[in-house]
Length: 332
Image (cartoon, rainbow, N blue to C red; front, side):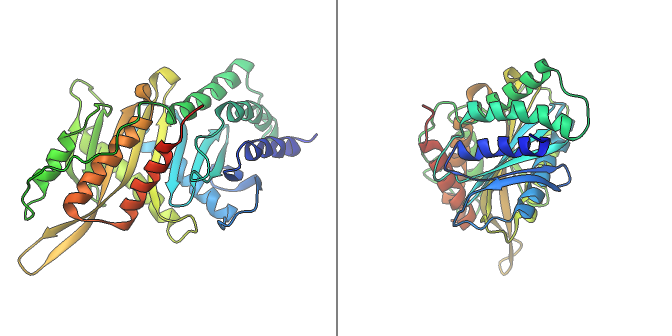
């Protein structure tokens, strides 16, 4: 069996492990396709568009991880209205799994970790580089397994509202501040609301963390990554980008996650006759010690509460619906 045939074999194994997986693509870091395998679906998927999104998904948060001195990124999850893109860097390549999370969630972690093990071995031969040691291959596949496992783990957060009973409709910022203070589970290291330009509207940070970058700079960088992903996916058949999450760290005991998602549109009045409307994004940095389920649950509740104050917005409502779908599934 040639190396390319071996790669296709492992991609096929990933595809067959779940009826919800629609396409598996392997490309280089610039988005050039190396191998792919897919199944028929009512969702039109262009492999070239998927590979360009894969390259963006893995590079989008790179600056933040560098600034935070948290390395190396293990995996990213890009949730769209119709599918999720799971992107993993293996040697000089990016593996992207296009998965219909409405049909099945989470992925089969054991099967995927096994595929990662053999792909990493075969890719060294494919690129003519030295073959990784067995211990390094095992460490890599175990990190991927842990990251995906933790993404589906943690205590479920009830779907609830943090909107204050009384607030001034002419000045919404105090109400939004109250919502941010109403978090039921202290699972974030820092979280904030930012504008498309990177301006921080409001932010919270756990004291004593001593991170090497300010929360304002962190939020601006994370928002730039989210905007980059939105631009790359604009007009695609995948639907609107609802949430971008990346996981980084040297080992599963010290993983950190980054989450970015839409939070509606906030209207600012310049005068009695004019106003401007800006998109709001929610940004969060969190340790994976408690799993990701409470993180996305609390993010949903904060954003739902903000919408109750500033008014409904289609993409943000779709984000809330997507989180409710994801949290409705359970690991066996």
